[in-house]
Length: 415
Image (cartoon, rainbow, N blue to C red; front, side):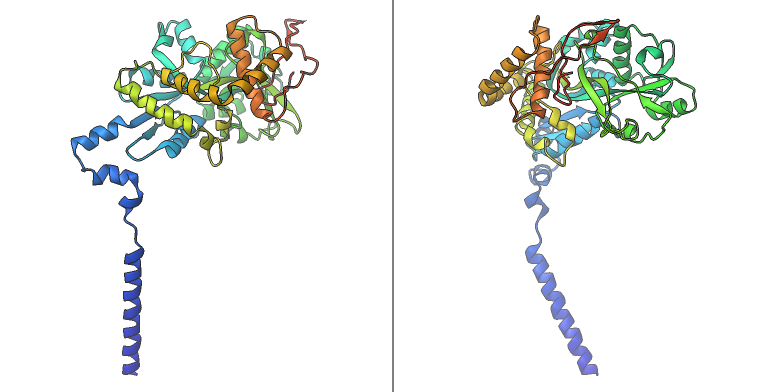
């Protein structure tokens, strides 16, 4: 018995030695597979050279609050673009569009931020800033953020909110800016309550406020959580006064089955989200850093537009202009070198056909707005030729019809 036990013990020892040896042969040095480890440790940990190299190739981006689309976009950029010590994207949790503008201007080390397109104009018009547009550039328009207006079913239109209390989120975000512009241009005067989204919904349920607004890319996580049959979404008509800064959009039952009956839709407007930066001069280190980011970002756009990354990336069209904003010079140079060479003849042909079948643009701003709509239209009809618009659903305004044909950027159809 003792002899047999020793044989078992000896066999076990041999097996352990074999496994240990095999493990040693197959074990991979993390430094061989991690560019980050090589950059930080193999090239001189703690040396000034290492510090300078890592800081010179790190780009910071101010995003938004936890759970929002801005944060998810920042995380996607970091995941796709990080390349050892060649480029690192550091995503920072922010507080919304207004705070993002301030952070880009004043916080040391902040290179980029995601803000809403209507923010700069509002801040300047209201006297909070002077000539602020010249201090910013944009890398690209990102996705469209749809306006959601939730109210009891006794309130059927935006006009019904005249004199009523409407929650528009906190004043360091962008929802209150879009809401202010929208109501001002529509001639409706509600009373704003600056209440955080979740608290606003509780007050709405208790009848302490009359409606609430949030501007987020659909389908927003908050919107899908609402399951109260006493509330519904209010439509926002795409009237002429809103067309300079916003795009037409649609919320469907597929987006929000708990709020919109099956097969139905709610018309609304959308404000573009913008990847913005300070207007650095070309001979500066900050400009060079952003130029490196632009090259990596634009080259990887097709990767970002595939799963598992956020579906809103599919709305990004790098060529799309943004009225009232100046493009970051290196970004425009990249587009001139790449996009025009790859697609200019065909895109130009389709755009000319699109214009011939739409209304003729009377101003450069008009043409830019149509081009934005065309890019959205092309995304939902990539293989189809431009179709002649169906009989226009004329826009009603003040009891009259404008006769203007409107393209729905979400469905690709003419309304």
